[in-house]
Image (cartoon, rainbow, N blue to C red; front, side, top):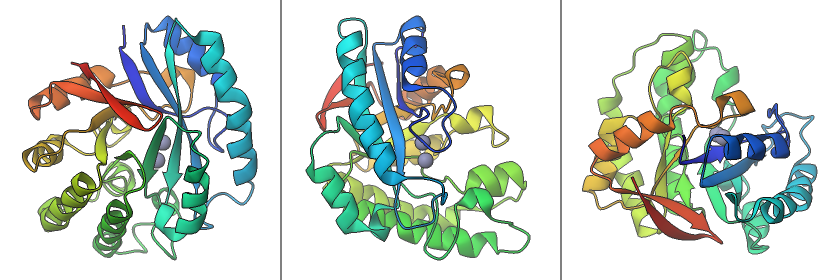
Length: 268
Ligand SMILES: [Zn+2]
Ligand SMILES: [Zn+2]
């Protein structure tokens, strides 16, 4: 049994492979109490040119509330969104959020200004340390903007730099800016997540890892979620148990669940 999964995608995302209905049915069969669908709304013009932002937003608007009603009493389905690079187009991001339709808003950084998603970059051509320097600057900027609920998959570029290319980077270089990022998040009432997708990928670890989650806690962070970042039913709930173990080791006794943008807590 998997108690929850708070970061997932369906075919409303350009890279989703299972429909919203298939994802929710699977969540029920896994025994979940809470399931968040957090489909991509990537800002800043570096998203797939095929990707139609309006279609995603409107598609979710038509699909998710109906599923919430259909599954009421069996599963708490959270109407979420993953807002990528909100600082690249803050007006657009703020307009979207002003409609108040979401339960849960995940903020994220998949690409830095002037570059494609870290997924597409060739790390033999680009200096990974320079890219990571820019990534952590933009992550801090995003935390300072702070109009989301949690900041997703901190250390995302490592999925490719360390995971796919096997390049080892000394992350101590970023401990200062990460502290600043955590302080900005806490100040803005935002939290972080343990993203377990790295566990089933070449990276082999969560994003972020235990020391960063622990540090966030030490600095006074209280809002923590855990999500698999599944894009299909077969990945749903994967790694949540390990994520819970990591959360406990970092000193957390509860996980935040956002409904209508307000956190409630479930014990772990
Ligand atoms: Zn993401
Ligand atoms: Zn995601």
